[in-house]
Every structure is written in C-alpha cells, then in structure tokens.
Length: 288
Length: 288
Image 1 (tube, each protein chain N blue to C red):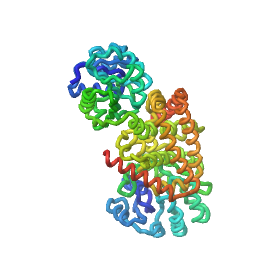
Image 2 (cartoon, helix red, strand yellow):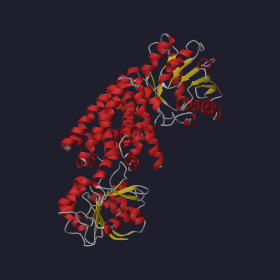
Image 3 (tube, rainbow over the protein chains, first blue to last red):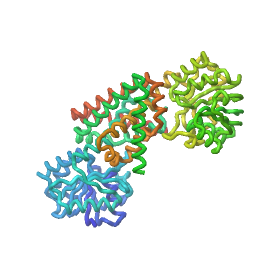
Image 4 (cartoon, rainbow over the protein chains, first blue to last red):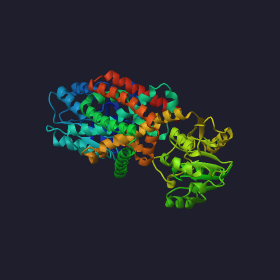
C-alpha cells in the first residue's frame, strides 16, 4: 500500500499508473505535478489525482512513492528539484524510455545514485498523450523493465515491483545498457522508420494524392508516426549510441534488399521475406 | 448483372469479389480456377464458387466476366492459356498489385492489348491469404484503381467499374505508370521496411529476447511482414523500377535522420517528426 504517491508528469503514463493504483485501492493520496495547468486541472476533474502543484519539490513532500514520468529532456531538472526534498522513506522510480540517460541525470542531480532510486520503463503506451488519454488498464499484461543499479536498495526494488504487479504488469530486471539496446531495436528504430517513411512521402510533390491511396496496412504501419515529436526527439538524443548502431544494422539490411531488387534476385528476396514472416508469425503467436 | 464470372485464382482477393457479388445478387454462376485442389474444394464448400476447373482455358468458357487474381508471376501463363478461348463478349480484368508488368504480360500473351482488357487493382487486403480468408465486405469503402489503356473499350471499362461499385468500392482511373509509382510509395516500400526490420531483428543474436519486449506499436508496425512472401517477391520483381526509386528516396531520408541523431541535432529531428506527425494525422483524419 502506498500512502502518498507523487506523480511528476501527469500524462498517459503517469495518469494511467495513478488510475490503476486507485482502482485497486492500492494508494492513499495522489499528488500530481506538471507544467501545464489545464492538464493538471483536468486530472483532478477526472479523479486521477487528488491535488496538484507545479513545483516538484512540493509534490514529493511526505510522499512514500515518487513516479517521475516527464519527457527525458526534463528528467534532470526534476531530479535536481527533488534531490534534497525527499522523505527518508521515499522510493523514486521513473517511466523514461531510455535508462542510460536517466541514470546519468540522476547521478548528476543526486551527486551519486541514491539507494532509493529504481529506474524503470513500462513497455506500454499509445500514440496519444496527456491525462485525458490515460486509462487504468494500460499496464495489464504489459511488461515493465526495471534496471536496478548496484547501489539500489533491494527493499526499494521490491516496492516498485509490487506497485507494477498491482497494475497487472509483468516485471523483469535487466541492465541499463541491455535495456537501451533492446528498446532501440523494438521501439526506437521502428519509430524512426515510421517517421522517416511518412516524412519522405509528405515531401513528395503529389503527397496528397499518394496518401489517398494508402490502405489499411499503411495506416497500421504508420500509426507510431503520430506519436509525440518532442518525446521522440528526446529519446533519439538520449539513446543516440544504441539507436545509431541499430540504424546502421538496418541500413545494411536495406542495402542488401535494394540490391536484390535491382539485380532481380528473386531467390534472395524470397529468403528474406520468408525469414521475416516466420519470425513475425512466431512472435505474434508467442505473445497473443 | 454478370451471367457467368470466371475467377482465376480463388484466394483472398478473388474469393472476396465472388462473395460480394453473390451477396448483392449481381452474379449468376461463379466458376473458380486455381492450382491448389484443396483450396478449390474449400471454395465450393464455402459457397464462394459453384464449380471449378484447374485449367484457365476451361474456366473462361462462356464467361462474360473474367477476373484474374493470381500472383504476378503467374499472370502471363494465365493470359496465354485464355487468349484464344475467351467468349466474344467477355471482359477481362485483374487484381495485380503492379500494372506495368500485367500490361506487358497481356501484350505478350494476347499479341497486343485486347479492347476487352481492363487492368485493375483493388487497394484492399489483409496479411492472410487463401479462400478461407476471403469475405464479402473486403472492398467496402475501399478504392479500386483501374488503368485503362488507349485500346480499352469504354463499355468494358464501364462494366468493370460497375462490378466494383456493386462491391462497395470507389473506382478511380489513372495511368499504369502513375499507379505503379503511387503503390511503390504507399504499399511496396512499407512492406520492404517491415520485412527488412523483422529480418534484421531476427538475425540478431538474442532475437528471441528482443521480440519478447516488443509492444503493441511493434505488432501493428510489423503486421505487413506476415504477408505472403511469394506474392511480395513477385511484386518486387514486377515493380523493380518504381520501387528502387522509392527505396533510394527513403534511403536519403534515413541517412539524414541517422546523421541528425549522430550530430545530436534535436532541432532537425523535431522538424522531421513534426512534419511526419502532421502529415499522418491529416491523412488519418481525411480517411477515417
């Protein structure tokens, strides 16, 4: 049971955590914090939070659990603001999509890694944002990756794990570097391709006509290109190294594919497509 | 009203046309033709066709409408088989995803373009194939592109247009070359990216673990990588030129994006992502 939860950043991710914990009766008071006043007022109206402040250092007062769900570019500022204002028993966790940069921000702000810090990342989301997009079921049957550090207190890790499990999520632990590689492959690279494809078509002369003939497959394929541009800029900057490596790997694959098309090498194309289909079908079966 | 429809290739596309026309009472008899006996037997059991033959030249006997929905690589063989066996009043159309190659195949098989030929492409489909995947609603509110040639009889064009409109589709005409460019952009390129991404990840050492952390966005993004590999090999070979041009255009876009990430050029990344999001949101709004 969490007595007082401080949610810094009351959007899709932060709002959905608060909703899920409330639904399960697993939280006493929820204090929201953010920069957009209208969003915070809406969060109170929707019953997602009980009250709010626009100052992180005020939001964490008396909180036994602090969830930081701000864009990656705002993490360091929040950590600095709260670093000497946390309650002695408070646990701090976050929802950042890149863990290396969050840990570096924490190091800088806290002057070292506090034992109460449990870096985390719920693998869930939609292309929508803001508290109005939040819902209690977001984390059900989703995975949450926690990346505890050598300094992390096992009790803090246990409390964050329990919090996510109450929301219906499956919690896994891995290293910071491994998390950032896995996410570069499964999330950050696909977003780059979707943004790149749509932008590439949007810049074509007859782009209005082209989009008109895009069918359902295109809509699914490009859904993630409707995601928040600022958030994705931050993710790119924060996970530069792993993402650059994945982009290079993908570039080699596409050069091979383009070359096979140019050469009319049907056998090699078939081999690529069959391997991809079989991997995708296996993956979908295993996660259905 | 179609008296006798010959469907050469009774899969998702051919089967769904037959189902839709039957539902609307717009067809007398449906004769199916294909290579896989089990699929044809299933098509009869499902009531999609009335009877079948495995020989295209037999299937078209007495048919006033012939729909060729075989993989692009099989088009020329079908056209050759039926070229001197068509009824004088028969109209021939097809469902091929590339029109340049279909027209070239027809030229070769018919020794010129017959006035009764109306090349076409319904912009509809799923990642499934076979008659069991077919359904009468597939073409509702979807676009069908027809690419009539100078030789095409206006009456044949009118009959094919009416057939698709009965199925609930919106028919547009454009040139063969323009069709192949538009489809390279909106369908063939996205499929290459999905196949290429999944194959690229499948070839990574820890690919099982990587796929395990892929979330909903990844599933949508890669759905089209579960499409039929043989069909896509054929499409790549048939639309080599336009697809190669689109791949090159996309390659330039991705090089720019990768370079911006390497340089940590957040402003340029934000510009790309915002342009893409705005184009995608506009497109989704306009087609919802």
